[in-house]
Amino acid sequence: MYTVGSYLAARLSQIGLKHHFAVAGDYNLVLLDQLLTNKDLTQVYCSNELNCGFSAEGYARANGAAAAVVTYSVGALSALNAIGGAYAENLPVILISGAPNSNDHASKHLLHHTLGTHDFLYQLEIAKKLTCAAVSIISAADAPALIDHAIRTALREKKPAYIEIACNISAAACAAPGPVSAILSEDPSDLATLEEAIAAATDFLHGKQKPVLLIGSKLRAAGAEKEAIELADALGCSVAVMAAAKSFFPEDHPQFVGIYWGEISAPGAREIVDWSDAVICIGTIFNDYSTVGWTAEPHGPGVLTADTDRVHFEGHDFGCIHLRDFLAALALKVEKRDATMVEYARIRSERPTEPVAEPDAKLMRAEIVRQIRPLVTPETTVLAETGDSWFNGLQLRLPDGARFEVEMQWGHIGWSVPATFGYAVAAPERRIIALIGDGSFQLTAQEVAQMIRLKLPVIIFLMNNHGYTIEVEIHDGPYNNVKNWDYAGLIDAFNAEDGKGRGLRATNGGELAKAIDVALANRDGPTLIECVIDRDDCTADLISWGRQVATANARPPRAD
Ligand code: DPX
Ligand code: MG
Image (tube, rainbow, N blue to C red; front, side, top):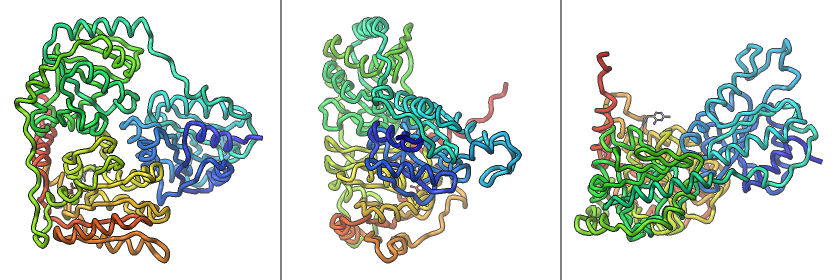
């Protein structure tokens, strides 16, 4: 016997979820009971719904998909911010909201947790804008079809979906779920189009001497990481990655030339991409941030764009092709073209590494990065928060297997605390390191308590520069100052009577080294290391990038 709630649980489990994230509320309590009946799914609780959404977002990064369960309006409207993030970041997160009793629709009743009007559709309408599929279940008979539609669409499109379930329907009987293949199956690439696209792309490359591959952040969502390596191997050309795609192409691959990010690119990477006569952009996203204020965007007849389901370049536009099929088929057709590697070997240089600081010298940002470097093993995932943490993280060299997560399209400060929690729930076997600024941490700090609750040995480097330094570099004012907290002391408060989290403060390199030892030894909970640095002690990359972004923001209105 299935109910709407147990049907939903079965489908979540079938698509590979072992957990779902939740905050309770009276519109979803019966649903939560139903989800608990599935012994293959663990319910994981969050401190608030924004964090619940971001925890699921982080889980989806490690696991491929995720679910968050919240209550109506007061919960869901907070979670929807994170769902917008999942849309921007191409992650299939299923947001499930309890909803008013089906009898209250079209009745005279006013309900709590609503606007105080008879409109109970506004949440669904908002969710439609932020998801690829949004359904409302007010009849158990319709539940299987609606649930399947939402989940299938999310998995296909790698975008979030929304399911709301009237609170009196969650425990109502419904049909049993069928085979999961009905949800997982996807339309194959159109073969005739694929063939023509490969012929045209081969022609395009035939006339070119200096191709490069530029890897973008949609590569993972497209499930095409392996195929990108195949194409790189076949072409023998240089491979640059965009910042948001760090770790999506192995950094110890011999053709890896580093991050392409305009004037703050890895040494040689910008020169090679700009010199190329055939930039193959794979799953790339060019926005104001990734183009450094519109100063660095490959364009013109030498650009071939291979997107998630579409390939286009001068005079051609082919749809209905999966990226992985295009890359794999092209790899079989192309000839070696290694001119960019030959040139790169001539011009390459290394960024200077950070000098070792005296153990009792005042702590500086560079020393922190220097001490984090050896922690990054093949089993490590680094999550880097919006702020100078992006630029610090991007400077870490990743051995094969290490992963790197950023939320560069949505850019919600505070994302990384719950996302790290969700990621750690999904991948407890990995070493998980979060780089977070003080301002960002203050948005979502509570989720450290959930890391303590589940005894997750996450290491958090909290850069306390006493402000919104990235904003300081873009445009400074009193609004960029942050009230200081006793961050290390906060962990004791979260521990209460039973927690095993550790909070430490480092003001010099010696203290930082000792704190890292404590963190590595603490397997029973998170360790937060507050790294105290000057307000303007930031990367040179942040200064250069911030100046260009500020210039782009400050463009005057057009006269017309
Ligand atoms: C804001 C940003 O302390 O990092 O390294 O000091 O910059 P840095 P912090 O975490 O400060 C972050 C701060 C205020 N961005 O510099 S990046 C605007 C913003 C945002 N998201 C939300 N609100 C405001 N990105 C939710
Ligand atoms: Mg800061």
